[in-house]
Length: 397
View 1 (cartoon, rainbow, N blue to C red):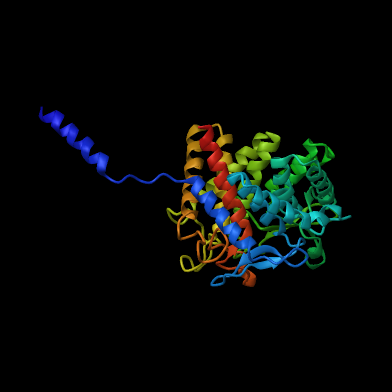
View 2 (tube, rainbow, N blue to C red):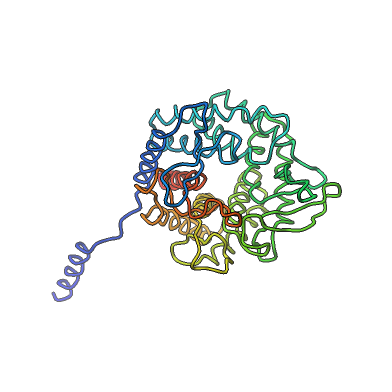
């Protein structure tokens, strides 16, 4: 009898104790929709600078850019994601409106730089995925051909910054370029030149060989001899120093090699994606899982974090968790991604009434003092992408 009373007492107590609230993914997608609406209401009409890029700390005003800016595709990409998450046609119409401004990128003779994947695949790529509009497909295929003009077969990589060749005296490739390979893979499988696949795969293999230190942390920039293709050196541009782990650079590597495995099924990419992920996770500073802008910055903890890196990696780890064969590793990656997403969705990181972006506390380019502790559009883009990936994974479960 005493045992029965004890069990009943425990059940009664446990029924009234507060439980940890479940993460409400749709609530956070809807929050993004609210923020997007606020931004749209403040933007100038078409024909003027009206593509949001960043909001400086202690400001409420978006810095606006035109279609040539490397961040120009993240805004309409975010609009497509909000449309996907809410099914409201208003956001579809707004995405199409801003996509039109990016159209000149697909008609260049030679690419200005490597960022065409960010600009066109985040925008038109998501638009085509959701609408199957044949005109969108044409833009994507044309842009892939433009990007391929920067490929140097002697080096085995795409030139990232043509404008910097004279300054460096060398062919330069940055780790960010890994993300732009998805445009080439997609085009090669959807009616484009089959050689685009080989270019993308070779770029990834060359980057894997030359862009990383022995501990699998990434350089930001690698310089190659333009004529011989030999590596000259690895260096930084936006990290603290040439030998440090710049957080967003490592995030591009994690996301990029995860995507390369998905597109090629080459096991070396899956293995490498885990190696660059594991060194990142091992060195995260605390339970929030939001990194400082550079893991080796000398003024940690009195320096800025980078929510954009956390958003990129959360999205990548949701996908990587579905690709790895080891169940423990899969569970670890999923749990880490979920925790990153939960941290980003707190009042510590959501912009809310502070400004019209989704997130606060991203860091752009510390060495030149640009966009430090700011709201930045690519953080918003990968944040809502991560929310949608999480939602889809749980719907399947």
